[in-house]
Image (cartoon, rainbow, N blue to C red; front, side, top):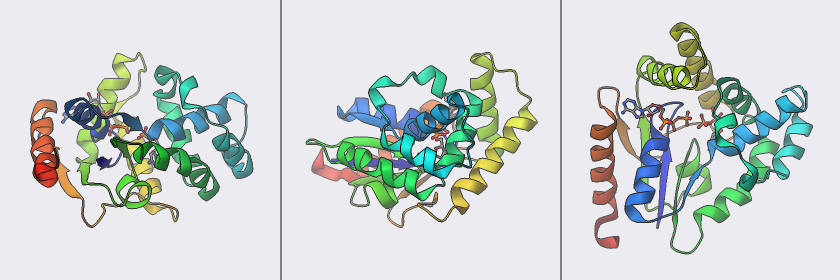
Length: 210
Ligand SMILES: Nc1ncnc2c1ncn2[C@@H]1O[C@H](COP(=O)(O)OP(=O)(O)OP(=O)(O)O)[C@@H](O)[C@H]1O
Ligand SMILES: Nc1ccn([C@@H]2O[C@H](COP(=O)(O)O)[C@@H](O)[C@H]2O)c(=O)n1
C-alpha cells in the first residue's frame, strides 16, 4: 500500500506523513531530504549551485543512511535544495531510490513534491496538502526560531514565495496536484485538526484495504 503526500514548503505534509506512517505501520521517506542532501553537499564543497553536472554527480552518490537531519533542515539548505531540484539530471539520479522505497513489499508513505505524479502515480491514496503562504511562513518562522535561526518573518515569507514559484514553475516534475489527489487546505487548522482530516480522507480512500 502506497500513500503519497505532496504539497508546498511548510504545509505540514511531513508531519502528516510521519503520523500516517506510524498509524498504518509503514516506513516513511521524506524525499525533500534527498534534495537537501545534494544542496548541502554542494554548499559544503563550495560548488556553484549553477553547476548542474556537479549536482547530478553528487545526487548519484547520495547515501540517505549518512544524513544528519538537523543539518539538512537549516534554512539555507532548503533554498539550495530547491535550486538543485530543478535540474532534470539531479531528479533522474534520485528516481530509482525513491521508486524502490515506494514499491518495497508492504508499501510505504512518501512525502515531497512529485510523489503522486512521478514517483508513485499508482499510489493507493494521494493527499495534496497546502496552506496560505502567510500561514506556512509563520510555521516555518517559528520552527527556525526554535532552531536558533533569527530571521524576520518577511524574509521567511519571501523565501516561501520564491520557493513556491520555483517548485511550481520548473519544467521537470513541477509541484502540481495530481488529478486523483485529495486536497487538504489546512490554513485554518491546527496540527491535530489537520491530522484528523488527513486520516479521515486517507481512510475513506483506502476503504477496506486496511
Ligand atoms: N496544521 C498546522 N498548524 C500549525 N503548524 C503546523 C501544522 N502542520 C505542521 N505544522 C508545523 O509547521 C512546521 C512545518 O511542518 P512540516 O515540517 O510538517 O512541513 P513540510 O510541508 O513537511 O515542510 P518542508 O517539506 O518544506 O520541510 C513544523 O514546525 C510543524 O510542526
Ligand atoms: N519530491 C521532492 C521533494 C523536494 N523537492 C525539492 O526540495 C526542496 C526541499 O524540500 P523540503 O520538502 O524539505 O522543503 C523543495 O523546495 C523542492 O524544491 C522536490 O523537488 N521534490
